[in-house]
Image 1: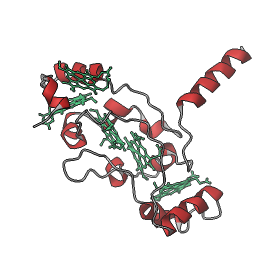
Image 2: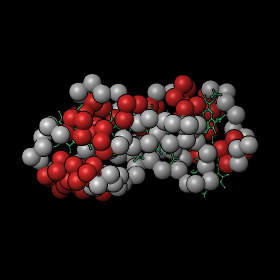
Image 3: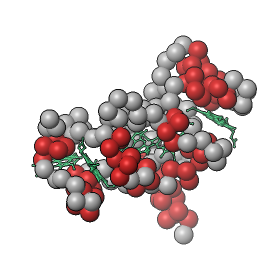
Image 4: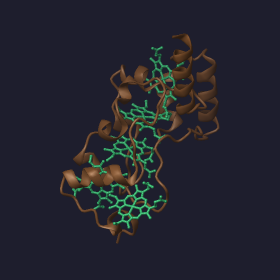
Length: 152
Ligand code: HEC
Ligand code: HEC
Ligand code: HEC
Ligand code: HEC
Ligand code: HEC
């Protein structure tokens, strides 16, 4: 069924964001890197953050430096500019969420799926209100409106 395969492929391409640099979690996690080595969670841990370009360059000063993608990366690093990654998981501003609290309650994969298997990051799991509340129920955590919408 070539038409069905074509349809599936185009649906996949539509759901996968085109990133400014073709970074692959699959390739990099195979090197044994840790999630939190790149995604540090400073302060209250509201943001999981993206790695500084200088961190990528610790390897890429030498690794694959002839590649066009790496030359683009090196240019961002040289100008000390952040790569404008297209966001995949993003809550509206009126929701309070902290990675630090959740890190102890769940592994990354519970909310982000099998990241180590992905060349291109896609939104594999929902982060809507219902999915938050279901897990809070399971863990007997609060589901008071103010917990997520107007934290003290
Ligand atoms: C309980 C669910 C949950 C768990 C567990 C979780 N995340 Fe997230 N993650 C989210 C949500 C929700 C967002 C969107 C946050 C926002 O937009 O404010 C997000 C966003 C992100 C982002 C984008 C930057 C940001 O903070 O908005 C990165 C990177 C990330 N997560 C990495 C991780 C890593 C690494 C782990 C494991 C250490 C992890 N996440 C564990 C739910 C989770
Ligand atoms: C620990 C060393 C290391 C770090 C840190 C690292 N990389 Fe890599 N990267 C590699 C290696 C090794 C490869 C080649 C992997 C392969 O081809 O299987 C690679 C491949 C790539 C490629 C594919 C290049 C091509 O043309 O084939 C891109 C793009 C890339 N990395 C981007 C990044 C970005 C962006 C960061 C920072 C977020 C980063 N890398 C951090 C080691 C690293
Ligand atoms: C070498 C650095 C590096 C490592 C290690 C790494 N990531 Fe990432 N991560 C990135 C970069 C760069 C992006 C932005 C490009 C993209 O989305 O693929 C990203 C994006 C993400 C996003 C999408 C955030 C958003 O909202 O756009 C999630 C979720 C995430 N990573 C989770 C993880 C998890 C879970 C692990 C460990 C299993 C991990 N990452 C390991 C560099 C890294
Ligand atoms: C994997 C299960 C799980 C998911 C999914 C989850 N939570 Fe939680 N959350 C918990 C648990 C367990 C606690 C209680 C942790 C504790 O008290 O140590 C908690 C606590 C919280 C708190 C209180 C933190 C604080 O500062 O005291 C907030 C806010 C919160 N979650 C928001 C969210 C939002 C928003 C989502 C959806 C985007 C979400 N959670 C998804 C398990 C989850
Ligand atoms: C565990 C976290 C959590 C709790 C508790 C929570 N919400 Fe939400 N809420 C969210 C998230 C995440 C979103 C944004 C994603 C979405 O629209 O589902 C949201 C969105 C909303 C929206 C906007 C929906 C829309 O379609 O625009 C309203 C209204 C809302 N919540 C009301 C409430 C009320 C009322 C309560 C208490 C009964 C409550 N929330 C409790 C996490 C939570």
